[in-house]
Image (cartoon, rainbow, N blue to C red; front, side, top):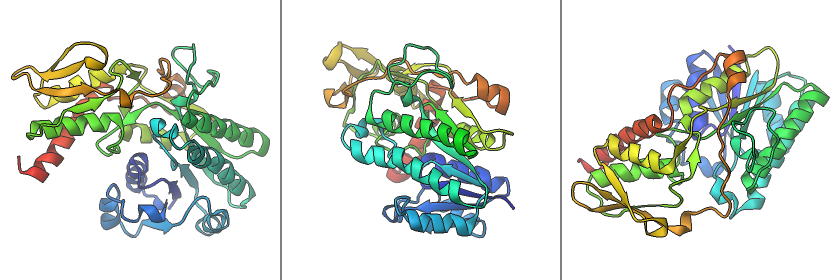
Length: 344
């Protein structure tokens, strides 16, 4: 039985990856921070359905001695580093913590792996934000890095240091350069989940309008359960390398919101421009969406759209759910959640 260790197992990607690995016969270990003891909703169904092959260890990656001892004892075949501060906008507010968790933590992890006698394959969760203000479209594994926010800077450092350890020390480490990928398990502070949850609550009768920032911001949005398939496949390859995981298609915040509302039969129109722009239900004119400048980022990335040709060729990976369809899936899931809570 192969053993896998997941850092960030309570997060969106970690929970889907744990499901995939358990389904493939792995014994899955996960590191859970003390702060996450009461935030394990995404994996509770796994803990109850397969307790013999899912083992949680409480600790902190920053506690290097304890973590080294833990990896030495477990001796996993595969190590997935998905942990860290994952909100781009928040990284402007807590830049030091973001760089510690997303940058230096990767270096500490690679040093531990390099010293251990038991060989393991390592996956590092990089991000499209490492490309930032790029003038290359679409971006691929060789596109120069040009991050424009603390999150992207931290991920760029970790991506580069992983390449160094791969070349200089022979560590089997993969950089998965993932573009935005969403699901019903996305945190409620992310714009996609904020949109779909608000749509569900408005359908249930809520009156508070959804407040968003730049509706014209565009992203390459995919579906998280499909992306973890690529993550797993990347560690099954013959050699370690970097892989872009992306749909190659752009979708604006406006288009995502329209798709989410339409999925719940809440068609909205737009009126006005700039900070005065609002969305109104077409049937009764009720304001359901309003622009709020507080949600604008200090700096907005250029067109981040990925070229996943290498993943398609080597891993036989391809996305199936894109942009507006992701919005539809999330909106329907949130409607079931809200309906269950409100009895609507």
